[in-house]
Image (cartoon, rainbow, N blue to C red; front, side, top):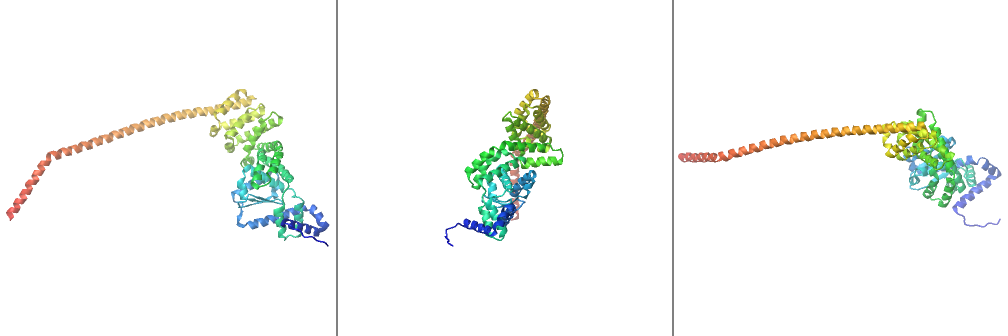
Length: 454
């Protein structure tokens, strides 16, 4: 019966009210809390999500905006490799705030200011992390609030508490980030960029930088296994039967997952050591390069300088199968005149050496044929250029001759005009005095006539 009144913060009041509700629920409610907690969490998250979207009103971004489509494309790619993530729901709100509202049950609200602060790899990691979080509970506090909301669904203060007080622990973040790394790798995203992006996400969201740095170090240890998963995913796409469906799948992976970057990372990791794992990565990269080269729609992705350098590097592999696949890709690229700009002098020099020293005769023959085709077109272009220069020179000579003839005609006309002018002046000089005399006589005759009349 004794009571002591102490100051309590608004957060404490909300939590106290939630605990009071749990007390009312009793032992049966506690059992239901752990038996059906995830379902209650989803209901609580959905209620918070709908409330926030309704409060945003016209500031909510619809699905036709590019910022919304950008997240939806990553979601589609990750759901393709993990279908159970399809229940994850997000919304975009136009705001300068750099925040992400992460709600229980697989709901999230992105503010456009956050998207503007993150580059593509960082945003990919953030999306994958949120999707991974949707598969786990947010802890005892989330379950307590979820059960309280199930008991009192009309209590607005519960939604406010769930929106503002459910902070995920560092261990939960790390577990979700490990899952996200695997999801990105299986979705053909480059996993090697993820650890460094944790600090960028931390700066953008204003979270604990030291904890983000610690988690980044732990996440970096998972990158080799994730890169193996990425190689396996790309290899599976490359091994798909040729046809519209296989090409569409490859194109989706290349466009939305930037698989060319993943390929370069695979080559870098494969060249870093002589281990069987490194050899497997190079072999997978060579097969993927060969598949991409056979699909002409993907040529722009392969003809960048970095991609060509990596491809030529893989062709130098001591493994015969790897070298054959890479040289086959180079031969197919060399067969298209539109790709000649990608074969610089350094690449041609290496291919010339490979024609003699490749790890297999098939690879050497492919490298030699690629060099022969490119140099034949170079010679043809030189001859064509020489012919065009000769024709242009002849055309310039004809034009000069025509201009000279035209100038000569103009000079002749000017001389005739000058001659006619001089002739008129001559006549005027000789006939001028006579004309004046005749005019004087006529004037005198007129005066005489006038005098006679008077």
